[in-house]
Length: 175
Image (cartoon, rainbow, N blue to C red; front, side, top):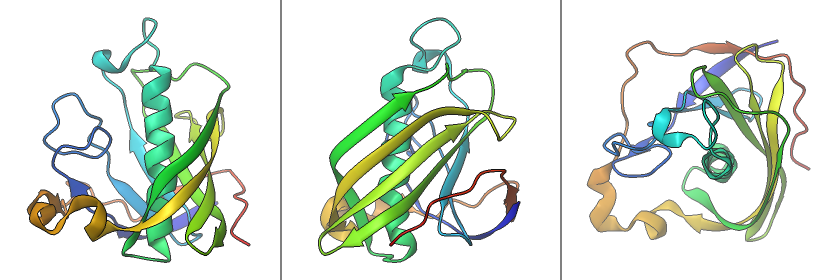
């Protein structure tokens, strides 16, 4: 199924996952899809490895955590998630030399907390490499980054703008 990209989210300067100036980070770009899923496509580097040619489990966890935590901003643009609990299931090795697709979505939104799920797909876009479920505390993005750091929070234009993505996965949506 093809999903339309509605919006590209901002990047920070130094974040490990999305920081555009972090030499050891993943420099991911996040896209909001029409079905309420947040998506990024990325590829690891040698300094993201555990065993040869495999992404480190902590990096996998960070990707899933950031993607789910950011997904809340699709419906609440000034809100991000601060992790309370995250459970990751590693199903297959995540390769370093191939693009992977990371998806996150909200499954429950109640009061000051929300729950979400995430997954990492192989480049074939059907093989699930890892899954996660998390619980997050809602926090205003300005409280997280601070007003003095807004200059490090920016929209970065894509060289090749993503307008739609094809995924063969059914997503369980919010209550």
